[in-house]
Image (cartoon, rainbow, N blue to C red; front, side, top):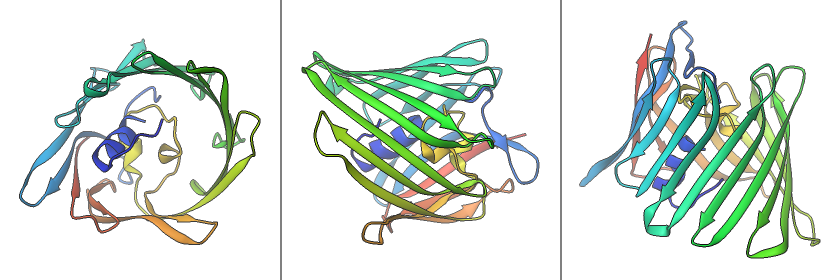
Amino acid sequence: MKKPALSLLILLMIMTACKKSGTPGIDGQTCKILVMSEILSGVPPNFTWFNYDSSGNLTSINDAGSGITGPQYIYEGNILRYSFSSIIYDNYFDTVFYFFDGTNKLERTIENRRIDSHLETRTTDYFYNSDKQVVLELSRVHSSLDTTYETSDSTIYNYSSNNITQLKNFERVGAGTMNSHTLRFVYDGRKNYYKAMGKPPDSYFFWSENNITETISADDMKVIASFTYLNYNESGYPTEFIINGNPVTFVITYECH
């Protein structure tokens, strides 16, 4: 579920199943994100809005400048069942179905992605340790362009306390060679803003307690992404940050109770 371009990447990381939105801050409050802005000097800011129902469930994310419709989130009661989105100029449509166990842990997602007449289906299963942390993720991708084509990958996650310190991904296309890469992570000591989005926790961005400050390639020990958090709110969530020294500043507005 990875998409290109910085603005689109950030949005889809935000887009990329909590029963209730928000998570307790360090002061005991519950916060949820209302607006995320991208501000660049001399350019009109781009805004992304997060919308919730009366129960606090995230119902949609709307972005003014991306050309994306959605995603829209559909529930049965407070249980998320599926989401859908589209990119009009690419004739792109994406639907994700979510499956949970009896304790509201995400067990499986099935994503159907269509570009024109090409349909790609990704099925992902999540496996947990005794602390309810995702330690293994298995995915299989089928493409309608070639019925013999299949990509399979698995990711192993290692934790220190409540943060993912390393992930190791293995990927094979068809019967080809198995490729792998390893990433390591450094964190701040504040609350992870992804947890205040109300989004389904279907990616490692949502699983750590704190905010990533560096992503490091363990293969050559190079920093491939750095995040500088400039300000935090009283609940301990970042309200302003930049990526890799980029001149774009990201500003987050919350509602806390």
